[in-house]
Image (cartoon, rainbow, N blue to C red; front, side, top):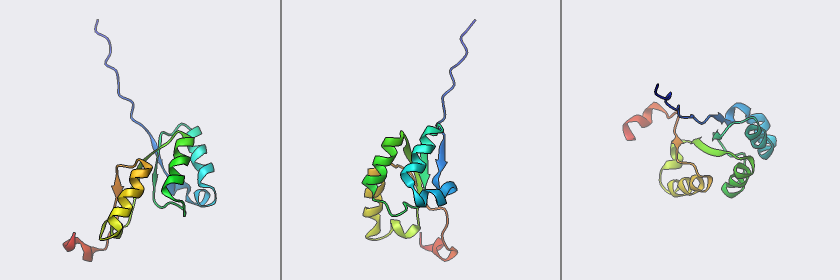
Length: 109
């Protein structure tokens, strides 16, 4: 009898926006709690005034990875692009999500 195929574990992340009020008061505490709950990653939609290196430390201390960030389209244009990429590289984030833009921008993207 053949062995059953191994299933690949799918990592589970939490969107920090769902706990935004608590995160605005204590991001490090929220990330620690999220890690203790068993989540493996978090998706950001804002950084609550923290610098990338500080957030990266919070993630590392909590055993979490950044699995995405929701951003405004403008952060990918002009001089903002390099800053956005650098910030997210520090976080270890590979996925930038523009979840909305005005219809007037559709023709220019």
